[in-house]
Amino acid sequence: DTEVTQTPKHLVMGMTNKKSLKCEQHMGHRAMYWYKQKAKKPPELMFVYSYEKLSINESVPSRFSPECPNSSLLNLHLHALQPEDSALYLCASSQDAQGTYEQYFGPGTRLTVT
Amino acid sequence: QQQVKQSPQSLIVQKGGISIINCAYENTAFDYFPWYQQFPGKGPALLIAIRPDVSEKKEGRFTISFNKSAKQFSLHIMDSQPGDSATYFCAAENSGGYQKVTFGIGTKLQVIP
Image 1 (cartoon, rainbow over the protein chains, first blue to last red):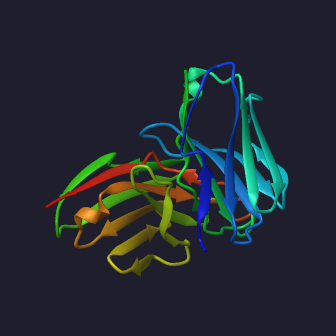
Image 2 (image 1 turned 90 degrees about the vertical axis):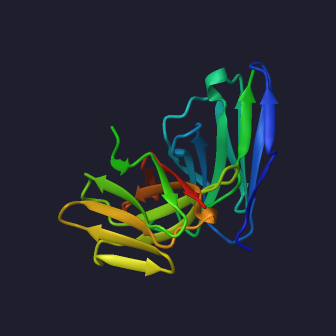
């Protein structure tokens, strides 16, 4: 099974809401990633988890809060977002976070902030 | 600052033709160069990748050409098909640290019948 699943597929939230994005993989990968992708742009790395520990935070605002409850799950908690945070949020996983391994991407969550 | 420059941003090719996408990089620490394919509504998927110790890699209709001295690499899609219509991202990575993929701007390819 080489699939990364993400829920929900679509999310509309107001600027005062709190919501969470979920990501799951069952490939035994020890690295998981969150990316943000705006329309007609490449994915931008937000966070890297290695062995369930946060290894990289690309200066992401604190209104985005990642969590890795176990090696298969990755969450992204959202609070007090701005309309400019509307984007496709992609989760990915790879065998390890150090070195060069194929990253498997999920289909993404399309987030709209109103 | 765009560390990986990609061109063209859009490309229209006739079915059966050759699609060519070019990329260039500056950072000599990059030592792994993957290409990702993304269909609308999907996440990117690895298509083919190359390391700088080889000048060419071919997988089916997809070929990467790599010129280390010029710091350039390109993707050739032979016998392009309508099903190849997607956005293609070249990318670069440094194997020495945590895995951070530096993407190019992307090329939207349309293959017309």
